[in-house]
Length: 257
Image (tube, rainbow, N blue to C red; front, side):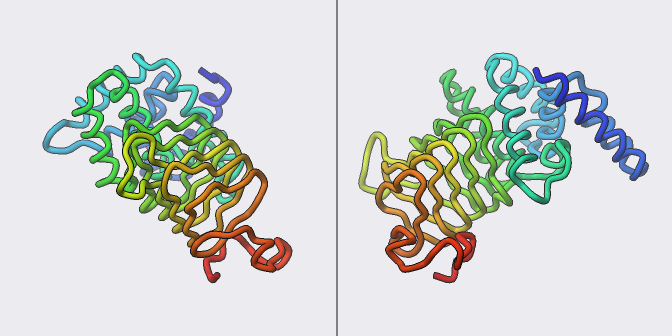
């Protein structure tokens, strides 16, 4: 565990309590009373994911057991928080995604469900997938492979299919679909390599690769590989220079094309 990160989170939470005393008991029970980041994540998730099927207490214990079984999860959670802090201009504190960003919390729920899936506990994995979809508006199949250090920004409506693979240092915005084409079996979902950025409401279909540091503009439909260090836009997506647009003239987050 990154003790420096956890210490920073605790200090931030103490400042929040000082600024908003009425939230003191809430912040104490979810974060300050916990021993580490895993405990805080489990507490926060249990407060949001509980249902008639499982109480908050049951979910917290269950998630803690899962985190204990899959030793890499806490490191992946730390990398997610660090990546959010470094790449989201509106994120001034490490504790902000932990407390308030459904992209981080939905991804944390996926990490628990992925561990369960790999241990052949498919029913419980799908239960957590369903609860994350209902609560956070994010639908990630438990079998998908997502490295640590990923940012799901805003996150509403993100769909990531069963055989998708996402490497580290990747940013994915709201409304993105990493889907199949409906008539394929086996490996049928996209691969997103390190450093890629996929802007809002883009759809990427099939077993194709978004290569390192590539950018997919907002609202694009991508049906073939995107080369390293290139930007694509449009329906269907094409390289920006083939559309006679320069990066100086256009913001890839603009979906007006």
